[in-house]
Amino acid sequence: MVLDSRGSARPRGCAALGVLALVAACAGPAPDGALIADPYEPVNRAVHVVNKGLDTVILRPVSYAYDALAPELLQFLVTNAASHLTLPATAANHLLQGSPMRALSMAGRFGLNTVFGAAGMLDPATEFGLPIDLADFGQTLHVWGVREGAYVELLLFGPSTERDTIGRVVDVLLTPTTYITAGPVQDVALGLQGPTGDRPRRPALPRGVRVRRGPSGPLTGR
Image 1 (spheres, rainbow, N blue to C red):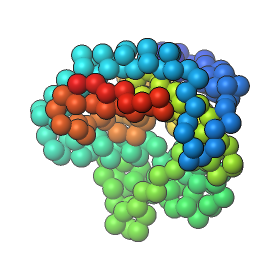
Image 2: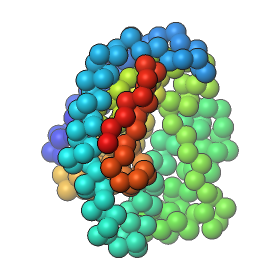
Image 3: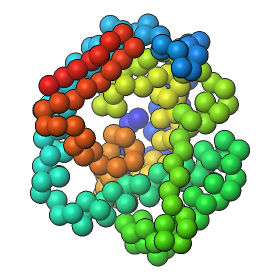
């Protein structure tokens, strides 16, 4: 997706739809639960090398610096705000999966936290019985019977499948920040979402260890 803080929403949407069409054309027949096919192994391994380098040089140092320097309260507020930005897409996906009550619950959570939770930095909705119930378009495609397809290593995002890659593109289109054209506002919103689209990256493994596993074997970096 083209992240041009001064551009319009239309080029970003067209680019995302182009990626969606390209990946859909490559969808493979691998059934769920089976060993995922890896016809793109040379490309996947090359992308993995780039991802590992970016992880070592940029993402991991920034992650640890954020965790070490940012006050716990700030981290709490940022994580809540990032999660809040995913709620419109979550509500839409629940509806597409045939769960209107869950969709209504997530829409209510979004409205409540927007108005009474400082634009999502606080979470009064959980106390009112509306805890977050995540859903994405990859899950929606699974509900619709779409198979996983081939293994794909995405730049920055890491391991995925063709089905979940399509899901990521659609979730971007369902996220309100995709259509924010005001430069500083968009920059902050996209920064809150981060590469995973849900929350800032935090250390999840012991220092110096990152493991990614593909269908052709482990892709492990230290």
